[in-house]
Structure formats: C-alpha cells, structure tokens
Length: 209
Image (tube, rainbow, N blue to C red; front, side):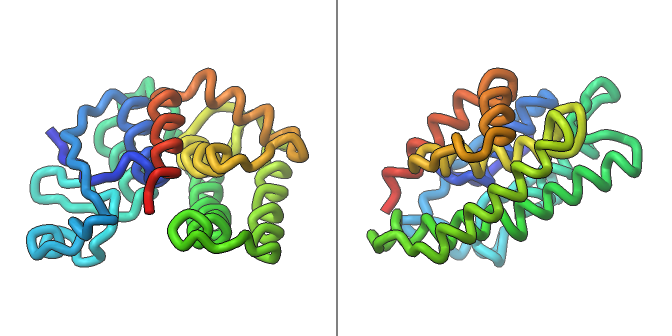
C-alpha cells in the first residue's frame, strides 16, 4: 500500500486523495501537523528535504509536489477505463496546461490573498484580492470553451483546481460573478469522487492557525 503524508485542510493534499479515489488506489494516510512542526523532524526531512506535503511513498519511490503525484498515480495505477488522465498527447497537453495554471497562477494567487488572513489574521489586501479574481476570470474563460477545464471530460486538472476552489468557497469567495466557474463547481460537487471529503477538508482549513 502507498503511504501519503498529508493534512486534510490542504488543497493539494485533497487533490491527491480525490484522484486516488477516482482511479481506485488505496492510500495509507499519515497526518502531518505542520502547525506543530511535524514536517521538520529529522525522519521526515530525510524522506522529503523540502519538508512539504503531500508526500507520497510508493516502495522506494518518494514524490512530493501534488501535481507530480497526481500524474504519477495515473501513469502507474490508472486502468484503460479511467479517463481522468487521457492517453492522447494533445489531450494530455491541455491537461498539463491547466494543471500548471493551477500550480503557477491560481493556487499562488489564492495563498497570497488568503493565507495572511487565515494564518496571520491580517486584513484583506485589495490588490491581492484583485489578482486572485483575475485568475478566476481566466478560469471562467477556460470553462466557457468546454464543459470541464481541459475538455469534455473531468480530468486530474479539474480535480486539482476543484481542491483549490473548495477552500476559496469555504472562505466565502463568491462564484456568482463567474457563471462558467459556478456551473462547473456545482457539477464537480455533484460528480467528483471524494467531493464530500474535499468539502470537509476545506472547512478544516479554517481551523488552522
């Protein structure tokens, strides 16, 4: 069985949980309390020098960075019937673009705006709010072109972005000004494997300090 070091409130960790459920992979879960410094222990540092979560251990293979883990799980364990990571090279390119959009644009804008409020109890920064909303506007544009973020079917890119957006929604971000995102989010809540656990984990994020 694969070992996953994670924290339920973490959006990237929840993305791994949802993809694992979607392709039928069982994970041996180890909660790592970052607020208590458990990621700084010598044992975990030897395992992952970045001291980051999620961290996946599959035998001798150790992976961090959630999007890399998502692709690894699909490449190694998905069956031909699984569609969340397509085989066609052009379809995969679209999935990669949206995954990197989440990693390099959407999620960083989310953390830049919300983390100071959650962890530092700082007031909302309007410039950072606008930057996050511009990222959501881009997502709304993508979803105006197709039912899901990378085409007609749900993929790992949808699941990764869904995890990010669930936490934003838990923090009372309003989707109404972004109708394509609002439509897609409702569909993900209704159909994505692990959606209930994703919502519960997003609420847990609000309790971290």
